[in-house]
Image 1 (cartoon, rainbow, N blue to C red):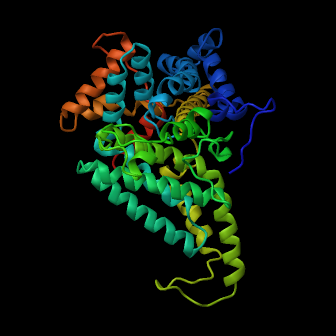
Image 2 (cartoon, rainbow, N blue to C red):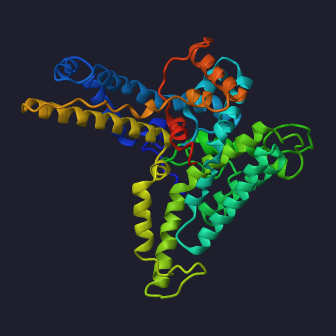
Image 3 (cartoon, helix red, strand yellow):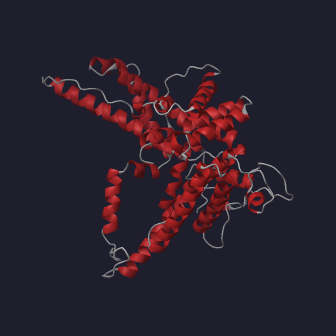
Length: 419
């Protein structure tokens, strides 16, 4: 992994990681400008609906929240072992950070534990993305298959309440994945001095991400204690004996998700090298593997990749941060609405009568997570979690204003049925 830093030697901020070069920020500002005077009056006169202009104006506030809140969130939650990463449930992290600021640390930790385990565990099940780290040749794909198998076993243990086994399995996989991706000599994740813990590309690579996790989970355990402290050495060496809690198991899975994000740039490099080596080896070969597939994969993998890119929403998600993905979706929806309106204006000015279709809704209008939870089983844990979010965000009020879901909260809504 490459430890890139800003020109002044300091790691990049969350804002710079989420929106490099302020690309989306500029577009959002442009849309907000169209929703404000004097452009607003002109567009309304041309027939643009008020709600469309209101949404365009509000998008700037949503964007600013997405790029500014992570600093406050990470400051509050990283010391507790909750890393902010690309698939984190954004709204719940924000609410938990608010609770920590109010001195309600236990409530904050309970909120995040419920958040990750709620909605059928959709956030925790992103551990399947370990597949994205290993491809290019049969050996790497075999590693992915077996890491996936072990992580699935860990997840099954977690859902069964057998947290001791789940935690131990995930801790070993974290170290194994990190060593795979950091080359020789081996670079262990649970070594706070490891320079590969910090990068300038990923959210997990922020100093309050993987590095903070490593420092927290690498604390030595010199004596045997009955404690729930989440430390690798104490757990795997049998010195910490009360670590097997739902909260700790959840934190361990979130650390895994952060590691998967953090090592992806290096994984992409290794995959490319492996694929190039494999192509040189089998070019022109008519051999097939045990499944009957041609070992000369030229053209096949490219076609499959192209098809997956055009048909799979998850491909877009795994190629960018969840926060940036939410911005992309919102901007795409607004841009589509603007293009549709522009088309109607053009036809109207040439004298053709056009029936106004239903305006396309912003991407986040798919509905809030709390609404989705209420239509499922009426789970008491989901009810408590959303009540806590409401309390944290409204200063104690039990009502919650309409807030567009962001970050991987949006991802969870889009993929809940397919994750």
